[in-house]
Length: 364
Image 1 (cartoon, rainbow, N blue to C red):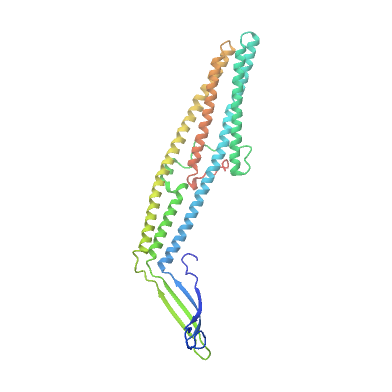
Image 2: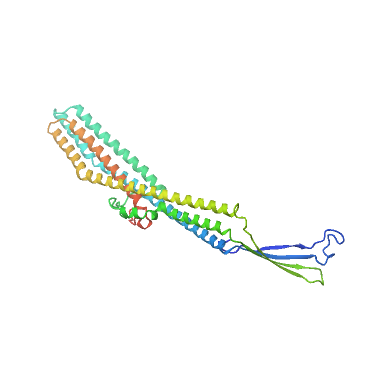
């Protein structure tokens, strides 16, 4: 039945005052009181019970809607993470590819010095080994990019062959202090308020069981010819007199469930605040590292490699360039990892509030 509405009426039919002993046993005509009956009975729950049913149904609808919203937000964040995975892999490959020309130049210089009699075959082999190592790293980046595209294809069907420009991962759609102030509006928390309303409605429904229910029964009885037909009307009422072992126990159980939901909600709220604070710290920390890498460390590493290679071309040894090159490659990989980590932290924060969901066309 629909919540809060009267239940369907019941149709009754049978035989009344049917004789089973002599005289006239088992005959519908031997006794003038024998009747064929048909009737309708309607149960009328108390107003409190019907109001509680309506409240419980509405709360369950709200809970389902909250779960749907939370699931939709979670899916969007997962899609964004997959998109960021493709973007990060592409960024890493681009960073490594930018180092290829200098490796090729180092091999050419080593060969030229060998032919000119000022170099050694060991230098040529070392430069070639470094170039092959870089090529292997680029191949690994290509593989990572294919894996990331496969993950994105899971969500979008056909992963795009080229990505649009990424949003500014250094700026959040909502300020961190706003996220901290609106914990209960965040997607992972929205279902908890609905669950509390469901528990409240279930408790009200249990309490409503102490209110008596009514019933009305109308029966029409048909007797033998030339005798009057009869109508019977009955009104019934339930008597919740012994509530200690019935209604009170149900109410206590629902109250305990309500308290448990409230406690779990508070625990989830504290855990969500911790998660947000941790994600904000991660996002801000990696952001500072990215700025330092981009403005200071990467240019220094590039200059160190170029100076070392120039010194080798002028007659110096190759080892300083090999050392500088190894450090430069490692720094580029660390920088790419920092970009990816900050972007994932950004997505975890950007999709918390439904109204703050990024509207950029760059992200799904």
